[in-house]
Amino acid sequence: MENKIAFLKKMTPDSRSVLEECTAVKANSVRFFSYGSNMNEKKFTHDMKNKIGLVNKTTVTLTGFKRTLSNDSEGHGAAFSIRASPSDRVEGVCHDIPIELLEVFLRKEGVLKGDAPSYRLIKVSIPYQKEPILTLCGLKPVSLDRLSLSKAKKALNYVKESIKGAECNDVEHSDMVEMKRELKDIIKTKRSTRDSR
Image 1 (cartoon, one colour):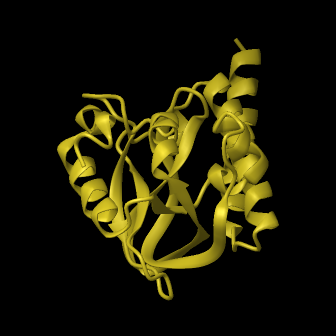
Image 2 (cartoon, rainbow, N blue to C red):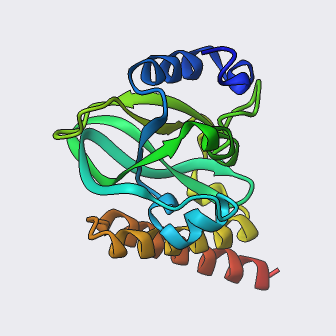
Image 3 (spheres, rainbow, N blue to C red):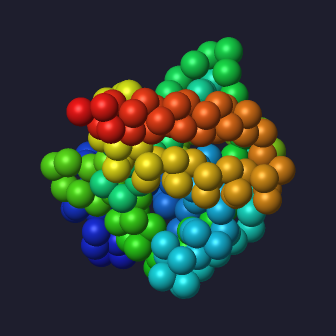
């Protein structure tokens, strides 16, 4: 395994251990649960340098978790994460990432940032999915009302792209629509504060 996936050394021990466990079961690809902008196949394909789209895509529900727009992101201002919440559920898509493209995917997601990764890998259980499922959990908490105006605008664009993906995959996304409204209010308030100076 170490020889096959050289980038393992660039991962935190917890993410590495989860990935090793999953690739021991299925060595040619890894099954992922995506719940944010990765559901938007056009954006995902572009972000993956046109090397792959959403392979073996299935719309699924993850129970016991809540989707939040709470992870700091250089590129997106703020990005989605999930957190344990026993009474909640998150809809998204499961899809395969071939082992040969795993490094590109994990680098894009900020898992391979050495001592300061943006996300960590966690294993989750989803009904009717036979193999282990990995997903991403944010490591850089951010509060939306503390975002700068430029980061709030980026976050709004990110949420809009995520909503497009949710709609295309028939994923329940009322929480995303609410976050879009909240960001619009934050942007409006920040603009009026800036203009009144």
